[in-house]
Amino acid sequence: MLDFFVRPFIDDQQLRLAFFASVLVSITCAVAGTFVVLRGLAFIGDALSHGVLPGIATAMLLSISPIVGAAVGAAVIMGGVGLVSRRYKVSADTAIGLMFVAMLSLGVIITSRSINLEEDLDHILFGDTFAVHSTDLFWQIFALFLVSLIGFIARRPFLMMSVDDGLAQTSGFNVSLFHNLLLGMIGLTVISSFQTVGTLLVMGMLIAPAASAVMFARRISSMMIFASLIGVFSSYLGLLISHHFDFAASATIVLITVLIFAICAVIFDFVKRRNSKIDELPHQHEHNHAH
Amino acid sequence: MLTKTVVTENVSIGFGRHTVVSEINFSTEPGALVVLIGTNGSGKSTLLKTLAGMIKPLSGNVLVLGAKPGTRVKNVGYLPQHPVSSHTLPLRVRDVVRMGRFADLGLFSRETAMDRESVENALKKTGSLEFADKPLRDLSSGQQQRAHLAQVLTRQAEVLLLDEPTAGLDINGRKLVANLIASERARGVTVVMATHELQDAETADIVMLLAQRVVSIGAPDVALRDEYLRECFGFTQPH
Image (cartoon, rainbow over all chains, first blue to last red):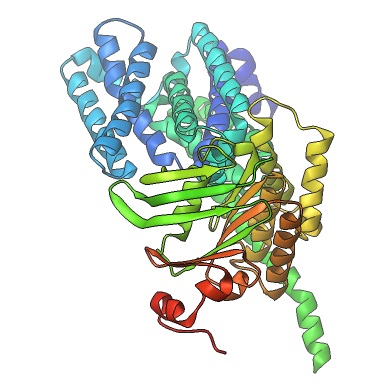
């Protein structure tokens, strides 16, 4: 039993490293994902995760750090969405959709021009958990620190904006500034996570654990803790399964987070129905007496 | 001591190039109640948002507590229409009410005993204490509205801008809101309130009837004359 569940993480140093990286990604995504789910920013998050592709591809062509390329890609998509929606008076959703496909297409075109990059495309999109180096962990710890710091400092405006932008604005918080800060936080999360879970699958880590946690949490802080625990558990189970059955690690991790969401949704629905039945009981009792 | 709490002079309000209402002129003193009445889209919420500093006036002068709207945020409380309390937010009622103190606390200040006391008082005043530790999403719309009202009260503002505060409330809830407004006015708070209900205007100092223009303005017996009501709603009050 112990051999199956624990031994691989003791014996295999690369698996251990992959687990540490996934834990860091899980916690970073839980903090950012909480606000993504509460503020309904899944689409812009998706666009950001795809929008970094041309930046990463260009950086690899120029032999510079893909993280720098991803940062430039994220900045371009955030700036582009703001510019298109403000100047051309189209809805934010349309602007996000346009920038999303433009950046994704550009990324594919750039990678198609290089045979080496075409091979790397899989790694960019789906990550390579087992290729994580110890130096990557330092960058991920730094990103987690920054994301947590932003989340802590801006917790009040972020919280108010989740209820109503007007509430935040009339309390003296600059909604536009904090919205952009939140986008920056999501961008940073995507950039720091893509090497472990890939640009496509990072969305799963951002949304699924937070969407599961929101059903049972009563406070924002507990939502972040639940989402982190779900992410960490999914990382452990996903890596274990991929180790034993030779599945793609990052995809397995993300699939488990979504399965956990499905299980949470069923339990939540059951608990809600049971509670509403309990609430109805005294009324039925009174009703019976009346007759 | 400031004698005029809200002043509007030849104000036009709207969005971009679209004017919703123009020629708005009124001024209030501490403790005054201004009631804005009109159908949907008549400009009530737009005027409140303008006074709250969320929308700039298209023209004219607006002063709230002697400054441009949106400047004295600590002294002005705003209750949006149907706040997006949403079905998903994992917040207890008490946490929602605590948000009312954020304008004073800013980003970094820690909550003090006074802040906590203010939250408890607001919960008591709005009858929300019994469900203060329940998640907001599990409550009825009326209970949610009480929680949002409590949040505005914790601001301890000098001007309250309330967009349909009685929406979703039953008769007891409406009485509660009327009493709350009366007690806030008694301590010198100016209340500007948008509503669909004519009875909310009974105790007002100024009633403004809106229909994408100012149909009438003045004391209730003047502003709510039959000819104005007919013009605004197409019917009159039963006598």
